Structures are given as structure tokens and as C-alpha cells.
Length: 514
Image 1: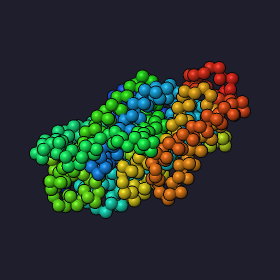
Image 2 (image 1 turned 45 degrees about the vertical axis):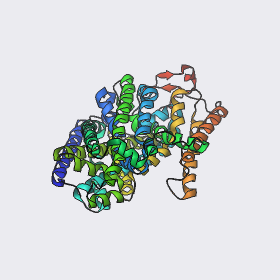
Image 3 (image 1 turned 135 degrees about the horizontal axis):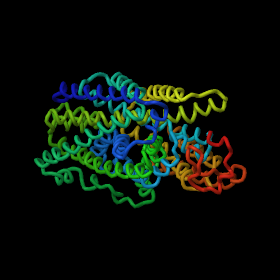
Image 4 (image 1 turned 180 degrees about the horizontal axis):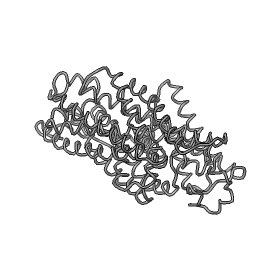
């Protein structure tokens, strides 16, 4: 299907070996569970920014974003990359600095800070399915990438891709994830930056961007409302922005990247910087995808390539890169895309794995009054990586659309947006209200899906706003009604010192954060 497949395979294979070697070295250098899970909260700005960007720029962004722009136009690409970029900007500006001040070791610990062990467990159970979906979408993307180069049956290629990601994540911990993220996201950004002007130069042969507008129409390139100012139209448009952005803000991957930063200031500015970078790289990718229609219309691809693109538009950007770039640069681009996929997948497995080990299993041991050593925390994190990875691999092996699976996954998690926001910023938030809001929101999501027999029920704006809005209302009301029976706790550091609302210290019991 592609030229120079041997060179592509060799370069990608070499990169995969390097990633695995880094994982082995980093894994051996981890002295304790804090090193393994949050790099002992000492990651510098450049590394925190790189791992954030690599986590969010994924196969869905590159392959799925280009394919969505190619088939549906610019408005449909708002959830990713632009909704995801908005999440990073908002996360950096309003969340990551405060989260870093808590000194927690996992996303669940942030919720436990205000809502106790049970509230953290409920939040964790809401987060875990999202990241199985997300990891599954990345495994599917990696399988498609390998298929383009080596061929093979998709199901078994996906199984092999999933095993590789599981082993890499198992071995290295967060430090390996961050360093390989830095290498891989650098390659990806260079690849996109090189590919974009080459695509534009080839487009000029057919009349440039004006030819694309003439072919597809001005509305195809419109990021706005496209003239639909009805209530449904406005809500649908806002849902495109809110689904992914609100769903990703409370996610364990964003929270964990805030925790690994060496200072709250680093956490804040790494989020903002990575958001700006994602918006810029994402804009280049979606224009490449949209312009693909001109090349298809002018029979610029071979008949085999056109057939492959019609069958799966997520192959478009890969095929375009091999046709337009010199062999070595095409290999650079493929390696960068592979790196972005692996970076997102390992983060999607590692972050919820730390929740399972630290916020579920650890609390069960404590409740049962059984000893729980530091090495147990690392071991259970690795076991969780394997279990979540197995589920994600099976999901990825049977998926159809990387982009849709990713967007739906984060839409599910939007029910946690207000519980996290209230935990950090509302003095009156308590466990009973938060649990009631989270359960209500997730029940509505699952009920909506079951009623239509699909993971992507329509209308989309109802899926986004109804669970999030009703869950928020329930949390506010129940928190007020139960303020006396379940007094709200202050926001504290992991060592017990109070960060916000010292007057609530009287509500803290000795075991509140144990």
C-alpha cells in the first residue's frame, strides 16, 4: 500500500526498541512507589509539558482528526484537537496548580481529599471506563499504522500492539512514560511541521486552498455554527466544545501530570503551553485532512490507495505522507505518529492503574487492617496496567473508528467535571453530595446509551449536557441538605496541612485521609 515499507518498518522497529529500553532503565531506577507513580513530584517544565502534549495528541488527533476533517469538515473536528486543547488551557489556568499543591499521588487521592475514601472510589469507577475506551482507541490506531506498513489481519495486529503497550507501561512507570513522551512528541511535531508545507505546495498544483473551497464549499471549512442558530443548533455546537474539554479536565491523566510537576507554577504553565501547542499542531493536521478531498478528486492517489481511503479515512494522512515526503522524512513522520499513539496509550493505562492500586486496593487493605507495603503499591499498579491493558486491547481489536471511540470515552467522564471543580473551589462540597451527583450523572449516561442500544446515542448535546448538568444540580442540592450530617472537609495537602478553608478543620477526623 505504501512505498518504502521496509525503511518505515526498520525505523519504527528501532524506535520501539528504544522506547522499551528506556522503560527498562527507568523501571530499575525507581526507588519506591512515589518514583514509579508520580516521579516524586519533581518533573521539570519541559518534561511535564512534553508528557501532557504527548498524552493529548494521539492517534485520534492525527489519524482520526484528519479523517474527520476529510469526511465531515472542520466543525466536526472541534472535540479533538480543539476541545482537547481547551481542556489543557483550562486545566493549566484553573486546576493543575491547585492539584499540585495537594501533594497527592493519584487522581483518586485528589477526590479523597474532600470526599473521603468512598467518594474517591466512586470517582475512580467513573474514570476507569473512559481510559479503557481511550487506550482501546490508541491500540486500534497503532494497529492501523502497523497495517499500513506491514499488512496483516487487523485483529491480530491490534493484539500485538496492545501487548507491546502493556509491557512498556508495566516496566517503566511514569518516568519512562514522560521521557519517551518527550522523544516521541518531538518527532511527531517535526513530522507534522514538515508535512504541512509539502502538502500545501502539492495543493498549489491544483489551485491551492481556493480549489478546496470551490470543491467542498465554504461551510466545509467553517468552524462556527454554519448558520444554524436554533436552540438545538447552538446546544449541539456547544456540546462539541464541552464534551471532550469538560470530560478530559477531571481525567486521571491530566491530574497525574499536574501531580508530577516539580512546583505548582510548573504545573500551571505546562498545561497552558501544551494547550497552545496542541491547538497549533492540530490546526495543521485538520487542514491536511480537509485538503485530501482535492487530491482524491484529481485522482492523485493510486487506485489501491483510493480504495483504502474510502474504506477507512483514517488511513488518509499516513498515505499522503508516504506519497509526498522523501523516504527518511516519511519514516520520521510515521515514527512520530507511532510515538504519539504509544504515549497516549501508556498514559491512558498508567493513570487509572494508580487509582486502582492507591485509591481502591490500598484502602481495602487499610479497612481490613492488613499490612500494605510500598512494594505492594507498585505491584498492584503493574497488575492494574495488565488488566486494564487487556480490556483495552480487546476493545481496540474490534473497534471501527478511533476518533469516535475516543470522543465518546471522554464524554462519559464529563460527569466528574463539577465534582472536581467543587472539590477544589467550593467550600460547601461534601461527600454525600458529590457521590449523589456522580452516581446520578453516570446513571443518566448509561441509561441513555442502553435506551438506544449504542455507545453514541443521539442527540449528542443531550449526552453531554444532561448528565453533567443534572449531576451538578443534584450535588449542589444534596450538599446543602446534608451539610450538618456530613460536614464538608477543608482542602488539604497529603501530609494533613490545610490549603483552603481552615475554619473547616474542626470537621476533620484523624482517619479522614488515611
